[in-house]
Amino acid sequence: MSIEENIARVQERIDQACRRCGRAPHEVRLLAVTKNQPVEVLSAVVRAGLRDIAENKVQEALLKKSRVSVDTSGVRWHMIGHLQTNKAKDAVRLFDLIHSVDSLRLAQEIDKQAARTGKVQDILLEVHLSAEESKYGIPPEQLEAVFPDICALPALRVCGLMGMAPVVNDPEQARPYFRRLRELRDRLKLPELSMGMSDDFEAAVEEGATMVRIGRALFKEE
Ligand SMILES: *Cc1c(COP(=O)(O)O)cnc(C)c1O
Image 1 (cartoon, rainbow, N blue to C red):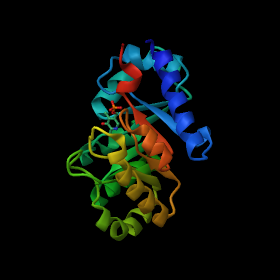
Image 2: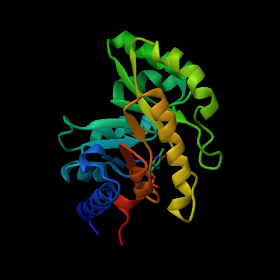
Image 3: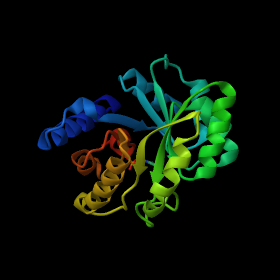
């Protein structure tokens, strides 16, 4: 399977999931997670027409962005990995959307760096849905307490929530985690919901994802 064929297949599965629940396919953005992939693969993804690239490390993104061999002027760059405060400055420079804001302290640092360059940085708040999958994220029960403080930061725009369901054999088992994240997002009246990976993105779409983050399903070779 070529990258083009894998993209077409994943997009078709997103479209079908949308149809099953009465959503329009354009409501869901497919993000290509190019972490651990060589820059040639990133270039191929852009050549194939995807316009959303997700990386999980600042250094890796910096290197690839400087070496990519295609025109990336229309590409949106997404940071989906854990971000240390001392990398906030680079992250603001590199990324259009930072999905992994998991503390007030990190939000304050991103705000400071964005303000310095006159940027308003789009962010998502990462919610800690499952202890198995990640040690990062704001605990759901603390979300409503920190939310006003983060929203008050002038150089940030909080666009939505991001989360990861636990790795399960049956994607149906991930569904309650996605539903929970959507309910939290609805309560905060935010537009974006970043959830769903290669093994569970259809359930995530059915539960309201506006962005799915797909790595392996795009880059497998069989
Ligand atoms: C790696 C990663 C993904 C993509 O996972 P796949 O299972 O390869 O689709 C999505 N989100 C985050 C935060 C990741 O680290």
